[in-house]
Length: 342
Image (cartoon, rainbow, N blue to C red; front, top):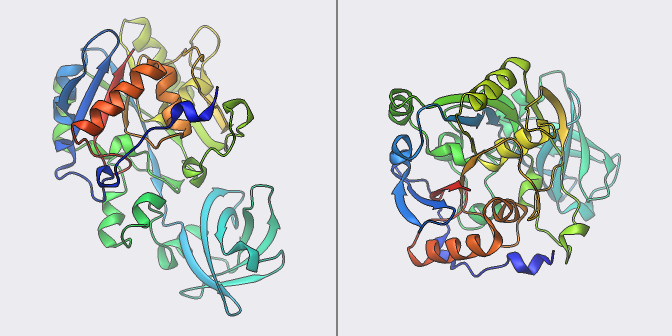
């Protein structure tokens, strides 16, 4: 499909620079097949789902993966996006023209790394010096890697260390938050429990590639970034049992959805999964593992807007986004939510 079919005009003032407070006070647009759009809030989620439904959440934890440093006199910025081993990470580098394999970068707080290999997408493999775990080095020298559409409008601050992390964050490794789950609070979880709505977690370490623009003119020519994920056997069994009992699996976020679809076989049975996935979901895709999606509002021409268009239909989502803009919903990572029920 032509990528420009997924374009739309978004006024800059619709981009949220801070989350709603409390988090579950965010608005939520309910989009169901063959029904009018319904304005709601995240707090209403227990009443919008059915007893026996299961929310599937991503427990990845965002690491402070943004680093600023120097190669000699040249300023160099790095955003780590994929762990390769204990001391080596693949990273997108700002001012990469000033860097070549073998160069050493001196970051703050005595953190150093050597640029080893330049990849086809322009990123580098960085090998960190010393013996401390890289995660310890990042806590010392790194900042939270806010999306470019927020970072370009304001500086990252200490509040972001809390705001850009979900209640479920447990497994270190993401360089972008699974933002649909940022809306959950302890009060909302208690209400969901009372309503008989289940919860399961999986792990998908979100990479910085999630923010890369689609540069191809046709979706068939776009090369999707890969991300590491895991669903253990016990979780897969519980998800399959819930569905067999008549419950719906509602993915919280496109990251959870992509991993569930990667793990499902042709009959829709979710299998244990551990490894990389580069699944690219566009209109025409037949969903096997999920029955709904809770997600924020996405960028024009992004792979994520393509995904929601695959779930609900392109014209339906174009209409929904036009409605959301008209009704002043807040967009992107710190913005409002939507509930998609095909």
